[in-house]
Length: 310
Image (cartoon, rainbow, N blue to C red; front, side, top):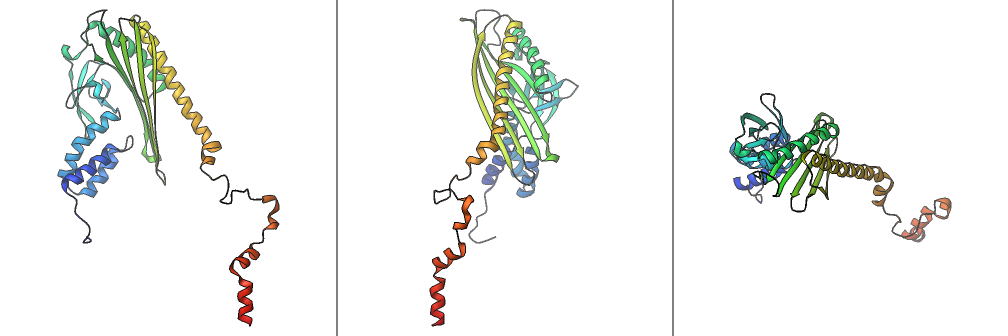
């Protein structure tokens, strides 16, 4: 090691390792982890970094895992987090214990009454989830979705406000083809009983990584708002999913439009329209340029030749 190089402390190594793990592209944290292990050559440092980084990564990327017992998928999200490593699956009323570093479900237990919403809230939540599942199966066949009650889960009847969060997550990972991608959408829905209005705030995020002989990443986000009438469970569910479908379709259309526009406009904008002379090159009359004469004049080659002959 060179004399001017300083050995990093274990704390610095953990900080760097956490950064790389948390910022790994969608579906690639296990590959990053494998490389970090070989670089660090210190299991204690790696394990401490992984214990912090993996839960952050898993929840921010809204990963979904297979539940044991054939219950289906569970979303790993802060909206369903009950305590460390325990996550509620509202579709099945099960609580899943997750191993974040291995990204697997270890075991499942039934949710308690205290962990579930009241019958009145569950009627709205269930109706919305049923409608959402139809939409997700059509739009994101390899994805997962869930509806969580984040405020007012103990409301017993009309007269009080409550809030839901709709989470949609889909990933398509193909590392053998050098590409991975993900779609994440979070919709906050506030049920305003006093004015009989539902207010929606959504955030959609698209990530993609292409790494065949290069490294190209896409990280695009969009936020939107909307509202609809507070109705019965079934009518409310239909109205909410209609709004979600419309906004997400508009966003997808805008992304596709941007890609089609890349070659015609965006890439051309990256090139200088005029040379440094600020004049267009006269391709129709190139004979007016005599490169040999100009170089000779610039370097005074003729004068040097005469001097040498003298």
